[in-house]
Amino acid sequence: MNSLSSTSENLTVSEELAGGRLTIDLGAIADNWRKLNAMTPDAECAAVVKANAYGLGISRVVPTLWRAGCRIFFVALPEEGIAVRKAAPEATIYILCGFLPDAAKTYLNHQLRPVLSARADEWLAIGRATNAPYAVQLETGMNRLGMDVADYAAFMESADYPPSLQISHLACADTPKHALNQHQRQNFDSAVKLAPQIPKSLANSAGIFLSADYHHDLVRPGIALYGGASAETHLAQNPMKPVVRVESRILQIKFVPVGQTIGYGAHETVLPTDGHFRITATLACGYADGYLRSCSSSDSAKGGFAAWRGQKVPLIGRVSMDLISVDMTDHPKLNDLRDQSWKDEWIELIGPTITLDEVASAAGTIGYELLTGLGQRFHKIYINDNN
Ligand SMILES: *Cc1c(COP(=O)(O)O)cnc(C)c1O
Image (cartoon, rainbow, N blue to C red):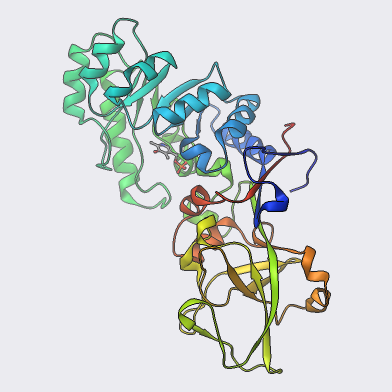
């Protein structure tokens, strides 16, 4: 990530006061959207920006996507829809969780379109006065949200006015060979025959990579916009540009004697080396920053990695709320940390040397969970905003 232009988000903590910094490459998000858009020439490419744009900030991510050409946005909840409306006043905005009846005025005032799986009659009762647009989600085999196809047929018979979009969601698109993909696509293609003139949308990020048969009229990528691996194969070779970098400052360099333990629970013992101690760096980042505790290292199970100057260094001991320790002993440039020089150094936790998905896999989870939890206390830096 080169910083052609760099702006700080004033709403977040300043760099001087922060233990970690989260750098978000808006230019890479725009490039990722353009790439997915080019991959789906016969479909419109929307963007899923739920959970505050996967943790990266709706107020910055949505205008970036709008300038790249994106016009349709999906969020989970009406509150998020309001934030998108503010960031892109002319956007088309869908609320994936559907219709929350106490929020009726919010949907109408901010022109938020519910994606109905249930409560369809309740929505029509308030939407019919103005023909307020909505979408329908169809059940095709995931059994999470979605209207049963038989109910959809009955609904279409009686509905005052039709939906503007029909969607369904793939359960296993990250596993291209999974039989459920084709099964869901067939169910979807047969369900939408009821209303062939209404636009259809099935694919999330991973669905885009399955084949053109999954693209329909509109695709709904989320994680791929943010540089995460969506398909299994992307763990080894990710075609998307990386978007986030996380670094944490060194608080202390310690010489820990062989035989002693590090961190809570005393679960990792310093092993004999050439010398009588190992050299650790204690960093100002922990699970309260979204760095997952399951990255912890112990005598029985080695944990995650950090990096400094392009070289990986292992975590040592448990991840605690505000701190982690990394073992710098074997780093080839260790001498550069001597004396006082470590005091200005930041250690990479996610970035050019360690991908989001590598950290997620060390934590036993997926990039989505790591990304959406990152950085409540970090200093946020947005770069390459002039895309
Ligand atoms: C979250 C979500 C998406 C985006 O999924 P990604 O795997 O992040 O691309 C698309 N559609 C629905 C219904 C979703 O809930």
